[in-house]
Image (cartoon, rainbow, N blue to C red; front, top):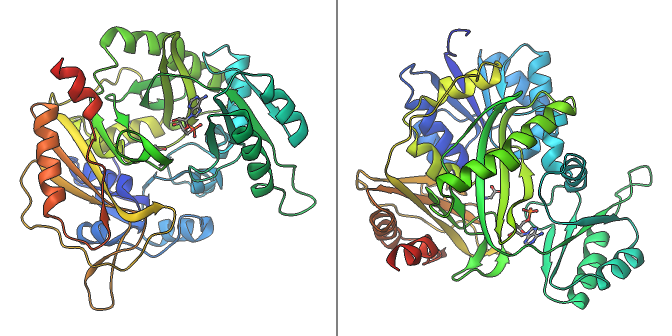
Amino acid sequence: MAPLPRSILVVGSGGREHALVHALRRSPSQPRVLAAPGNAGIADDVPCLPVAVDNIRGLVELVQREAIDFVVVGPEVPLSLGLVDALEAAGVPAYGPKADGARLEASKIYTKEILQKYRIPTADAAFFEDADAAIAYLRARPAPIVVKADGLAAGKGVVVAASHDEAAAAVQALLALHSRPEPSAPPARILIEDCLVGEETSLLVVVSGRDYVILPTSQDHKRVGDNDTGPNTGGMGTYSPAEVVTPDLLARIDREIVRPSVDAIAAEGIDFRGTLFIGIMLTADGPKVLEYNTRFGDPETQVVLPRLRTDVVSLLWAAAHGELAGVSLDVRPEHALCVVIAARGYPDRYPKGDVIQIPDPLPPEVTVYHAGTARSAAGELVTHGGRVLGVTALGPTLPAAAHSAYATCERITCASKYFRRDIGARQLRRESV
Ligand code: AMP
Ligand code: GLY
């Protein structure tokens, strides 16, 4: 393999990118790590350069100016805008799929077509441009039923409708919201799919062509409120391992979903080198694919990476160079749990600019990853986004990790502080019976 990189740029500004920065800096190879654009917490750790994630030309120029020799891309937007293609053209290796692979996240209809073509277990679905046809179809299916916009929608493109009327309203709303911006653009499409019932799990897979490594299991909590109530968010908290995914079940998921997915992507002519994040519903009928994302999860990364003893620089570098065959992981036995501190009102309207105070020092088992944070003109740490911090703790058991993470959440002060009180509760309940 080519010698490990000396300088690495992490693209993005969330908790996921802060966790990536920490993991890369733990490497024995001691690379210089930079971030663009980063956030206030990342800037406390490494140099941050003010280039936005959708400024592809600006990012390539930055990489050349700073003599970066490896780029790790966090979010989906630069991937689907072709950042990795542009870096390849400039001769710079990157971890993350090119635009053809990123389409697996950017188009839910494209993904569904691949799932159907390769007979990978997933919910039955149909696609529509026309609202009347969509509504006629969904009224003939049992409710609840799921309506999805085709394109990237920052978590707002999916409606799990309890009734046919709610689903019909969602069809109108999503088609109006995603209607073509200009006459030459393709028409907006929506997907209607059967509702799957079960527990959800996030499987992060480091892929390099036909080779892959499955990262430790995790579960996210997508709804904003306790007991999974309220609107969907980007994720309010995670834990790892997800013990609902027993070794036998993981072997089944590997056989029925991961291997067929990786082979299908390769068979479609895509040389995928990056994270395939498979959202899976564990139904009574077996595991089924909800979606593919083509990047690390946020906040899954905040619990998965701290559990790796494996050098993350070597892992991602090997994947980017097509040299993942034979790589296996060394995973710490500890449990990790991450509680997201959000600004009250997220995912709708929320305030910005509230002063945040984080205890210093933190207990050794706790790390606070920054997401939507910034520095005020006076240099104070302030809120700057919906999800503000990810408080991650490691512990010998899940209750121990939860106890440490929640104790730190209580000690963090911020006027708009909001967090779920039940991260990990489902697994904790299962353990106590
Ligand atoms: P997606 O972006 O497709 O993963 O959808 C976002 C969330 O909506 C998922 O994490 C699930 O919680 C829910 N969801 C999506 N599709 C379905 C489905 N077919 N049945 C039940 N829930 C779903
Ligand atoms: N936490 C879910 C996601 O990253 O999409």
